[in-house]
Image (cartoon, rainbow, N blue to C red; front, side):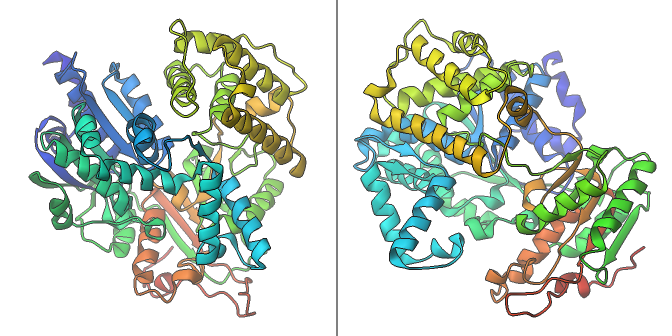
Amino acid sequence: MTEYNFLKDLNEKQKYVCVSEDNFILTACPGSGKTRTLTYRLAFLCKKFAGSRLLNIAITYTNRAAEEIEERLVGLNIETSSIWTGTIHSFCLNYIIRPYAMYHSRLKCGYRIIDEYIRDEYVKSIAKELGIRGYINDLRKNECIKKKYYNLLEKNKEIDFDLILLYACDLISNNNFIAENISGIIRSIHIDEYQDTNEIQYSILARIINANPKINILFIGDVNQAIYGSLGGVAKSAKEIRKLYPVNFTEECLSGCYRSSQRIVDYYKHFEVSYTGVYSVACHKEELGIIKYNSIISRDEMPYEIAQIIKNELSAGVKENEICIVAPSWYRIWQFTNQLRKLMPETKFDAPDISPIKKDPLNVFYLIARLLFTQNSGHINSRKRVALEIMNILHMDFGISIPEYVDNYLLLKTVNATAINIKDGIETLERAVHGLFSLLKIWKEDIPTLNASYLEFFEKTRARIKNNELKYDWDSIEKSFKEKKGIVINTIHGVKGEEYTTMIGFSLHHGVLPNWEIVNNPDCHDETYKLLYVLCSRAKKNIYLFSEEGYSTGSGYPYEATKVLKQYHFKYD
């Protein structure tokens, strides 16, 4: 059993889930080792069935989560050829749309995937044509705009993120052999953060499991952290899951929290919408830490107060990357970040910046840029996967035959050999693209969809640089691709799954938390509880919360503190 020595890192419940052949609906409380359990289960299956070609699939909510699992597997020295990790969109593209597009009337003549930037530009253009004003999110709900938008996509042979799932569901629902083919190459499926899975995703996965009930399946997540309801996320009950999937499930719960002190756990348990029995098993569980809430400070004073908190934390030995500042929405974050940087110029911040090249993991030119500007990162396994994805996109999305002599190593070598123009990183990227196309014997002018994507990518990138007055020399762009370090500033949604010694939350107002769009919704109370639960359960020892005064609504009324916090009678420090 020496080959399974890595399992000694787990507690008994985690180990049981990893080695059992049961199908699981697993509730994982904050800090209970969810990602570790999922990763070790993949590693165990990989070791147990070494040499098998059957795949062990992990469906994650974000690309970042998938990359973290892959990095942990590499750290365990696991050979990962039988493991696939990625988002549901990536899964649908790789296993349903790309191989079977010819069976869908809308996709069989070709398609191009657009990002949210192009989507929003289309929506704004249609709204202007119709004389309709409003915010983009509101405009997208207009039936007339939606109809014209989807007609435009069809005319241009384009699909957006939502259509990836919709058309994948169409294909797998209307062609039984697709589900049978896919289910025949899979041993297990792990659905991370299942509480944020939407109905279409549940349906797609159910088709695969119904085609082969022998596939081992694990749902892992926490109903209390279901904060994507506005995007269609559905936290199904065990009973509802059993109706969809024709297998027996074992229900288990990881309740021990290795992250937070007991005082922190006791504080955020107040925001539970579903009882979990979470308790601290952290080495610092007896520490009292600090829990503060301020609802009388002005918005002008708040940056100074938070700057002082940061100085105190750093003086107490807390590292910069162990401090996190969050707000419910990006709107309030931009200005605050600039204020804080001016107040603390010597402090590093991992905060939102506008980079010259917009991140888009489904765009082949972004992926080429990622290889070019991260060639000194040392993450060879990640770079190999990106190289393979580039070849897959060129072959499956653009119909290009990849020469047999080209593998991911040769592709990486070609990109690395690009002559660098120190003064112009974008020109260097164009060189890398042309060098790669030369290797693959691609003449983009002969492939209209590829040529259009090329022109659009570089036009959009140059416009982004011009409009935001960004530097585009080699060093500046290379820096934008490096992992940021320092005090994290993000949204509550953006830090789910992470942990910090000290959490600082601001702009906790009724109308922001919850958002005005749902304040009259019967479920708004639960949504607020879940967001506060996520915010506070990131903390190991300290929590500082602010509902600063000085903001006004569009009607001129002052924003009030989030009611859930105002009504929570806790003995704050």
